[in-house]
Length: 150
Image 1 (cartoon, rainbow, N blue to C red):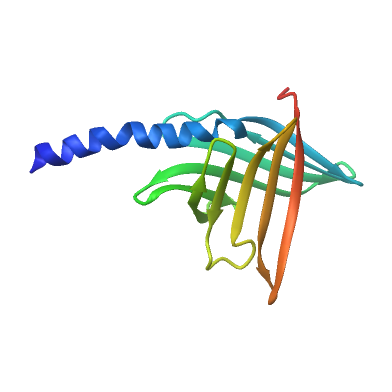
Image 2 (cartoon, one colour):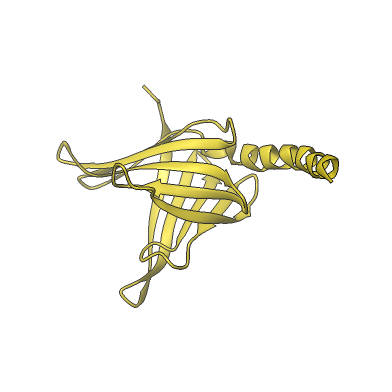
């Protein structure tokens, strides 16, 4: 039985690696400017069954929002963990769909957003958060352009 389990585990490992590697299009540094707001996001390359990310929004030279993100392997596949408060475990959004140009994560029990989408577009990365907010459908788009990771 143990040999069968190990054989299955060895066969699945490349699949997980390939699935995470498909998200390589997210790697790099990205930003979007909207009036006085600057949103910056940075993602590491896939390695060690994870991708690490950080995001911040600044206005008039002050950080008004920041979060750390992690795409990680779980028992059910991959998930996106968003952590806003230090020392807290964060919210886990399960990967529900993935291609070489788009990935969708979802947690229907979260307040807002319930869905996080990343899509490769010409010259950049398109991100969207969406769901129900105070009883009404809501979505926020982040059409980001590639920038230097200096």
